[in-house]
Structures are given as structure tokens and as C-alpha cells.
Image (cartoon, rainbow, N blue to C red; front, side):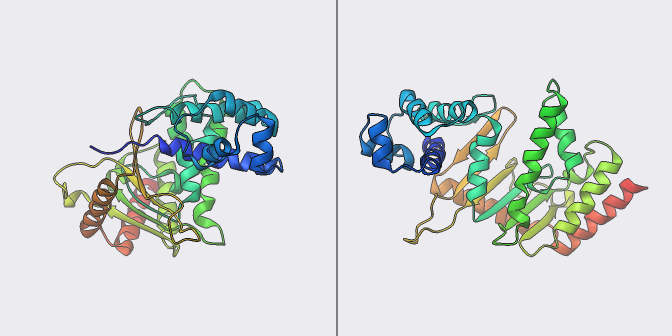
Length: 292
């Protein structure tokens, strides 16, 4: 059975608390004194190692550090998820979008390895992203839809920034090329964007063709493996993990054996996927079909 660890939201909370404290110009000892707690308590909160998180402590830290209402609500939401014994990330409004656990992990990743059945968010055009967002949130106002799309597009700077762009290795199921999202013009632009983006040195895009059948004898569903940079002591700042997204929520797997199973699954899919060059050709051919 895979380990679904509550330490993930705790570590996310810890990073945000540390940033909040440092932004307020306080030491751990000073913050601890002002909230009338021990320095060890604050340190454990910031390292994600606290066994139990008191919401009062989080609220007190936010008040002392001058956090706004949105930030305070986000950190309290993370604290509640961190207190859950068997944690998974359920979609909802407990944590505001800008504090999403996955986005925090993604932003700190050194490498992303993925299998997807839709164009992943990091490679979506604004029009493709807008269509999916409107379908997923049909009752939301246009302003909120625009904000969600903007967050998704801004995440893409991870891949395009000049300094240390994150390597991304994506295997894309061919169904993503045939499933029309938003109309033929949007699909034309999206597939051309994929073909062009795949020429970047840090991005690998390969298509798993229908002709490959079911190479693993079962369907894995979409997943992303996140690997993290090394610390000064040659240890990763986070353990490698798998993010497996579903309709009602997402699961995070840190267990080494499970991560390696997914890594092997990606390698096996890569053995039967089209080459990068053939994938780009297929993407351009399909785009031309939509343009006709």
C-alpha cells in the first residue's frame, strides 16, 4: 500500500511560515517570544516536523508577521490538512489556489517526468487552458476564470526562464491530439505550440501512439514524478514523489518503491513512444488537419 504522507502539506506550510517570518525580519527566537511559544516549536513548524499543529499557533504567527486574510486562511488550511493522519489533496476551497500544495512543489522541483492524457498545464496555450478551466468551473465569473488561467500560464516560466529552466520529460497519449478542446482553431494553435516547445533543450515531448496498445497491460492514469535539487549536504531538499491527479482530488506518493514503479512505467512507455522528431512531425501533421 502506498504511503500518502501528511508531511507534504506540513512541509509546504513550513516553507510558507519561514518565508513569512523572514519577510517580517524576525528570527525564530524573536517570533517564538512574541507568540509565547518555545523556539523549538517554531522551528518544528518551519521544518514540517511538528507532530500536531495548533491552529492558534498559525493564527498567532500570521498576526505577528502581518499576514493578510488570504494568507492566514491558506496557512490554516494547510495546517488542517497537515493534521490529517492519511492525507490526500481534495479539490476545494480550503486552500486558496496561489498556495496550492502541488504548485509549491512544482516550483521547487529540479526535474519533472510525466505521462499525460491531456496537454499538461505547463504546455497549454491560454485558449486551451481557458476552455478546460471554464468546463471545470462553469459557475465561476469571468474574472475568476481569467485569474485561474493566468496562474496556469505564469507557471510556465519554470520551463522558459533563462537561469536553470526545469527539465520536463512528457509522454503524451495520442488521444490528447484527437480529443478536441475548444474547437479546431484552438487545437491547431495548441499542437503547433507543442511541436515548437519540444525543440527547447530542456523539454522532451513524445507521443504514445494508438498502435502501441496498452504497453504495461494496465492503464496508469496521468502522473508526474517530481525530483528535487540537492542541499548543501548532498541530500534532496524534498524526497522524490509522484503526483497522481484524479477527478475528485490528487494523491502524492513518497514511498521509494512506489516512486520507482512509476519511474519504470515511464521508461517502459518511452520504449514504445514515438521519437521526439516523429512526435513533432505528428503534432504538426495533426495541426494542419485542424487548420483545413
